[in-house]
Image 1 (cartoon, rainbow, N blue to C red):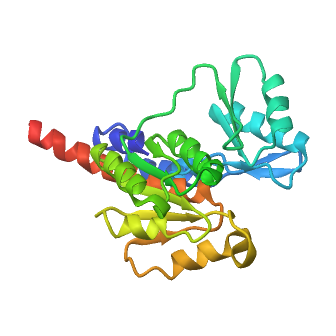
Image 2: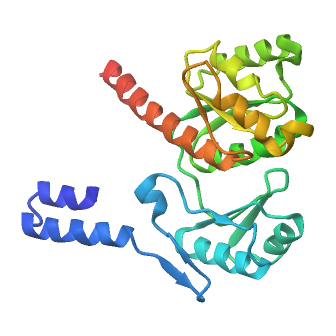
Length: 270
């Protein structure tokens, strides 16, 4: 789109031609890649929404996931699959096509296939990431890996639940020193950590209820309800165990902040 506008500005193309090219560009960004009658890959989702297409492996046959992630990598230089079990991850890594590489994140259950020279553009966004307990780390790692793939830098600290409030304060102080733009907090059980954090900082906080717990709080329902009932304004809550959703929102927000921070800094330099 920028190229088309530059051509119009420089008199290379007419207004009518620019309109035609912009309309075609908009249509192309909506195109789907139909793969072996299995799925329709949204190849241009990242250009359109800022969030790349991710293949959810859960519920799919292993061979389907392999076919889709390799096709995505071939078309866009990178393919990402989430909720990948270890056997599938190893299978993908062992069958990566020539000229590509596989990055396997077992704890996060994510596999990324990239062209050998693929480089993720950095946005300058800075995200803080906390977990209440060590049992929440898998969800936090999902958020961390995906946020990094969206171009952000992530500063994490785990097992800092308020059962020992000194741990919370120390970790929070560390994130503030890193000048993060938004904080993701993963918590199960009573899940009061994100509420506490939100009451201590002037930053947006994203709460991720985890399915850690038992009894009446089984499968994350108690953490979810606790966060939704928070009286600390400015806390956003995603679905249970949804590290991907938290990372998507956090990265969009942090990258936007970084964009205008860079503009402001450049103006000061000028």
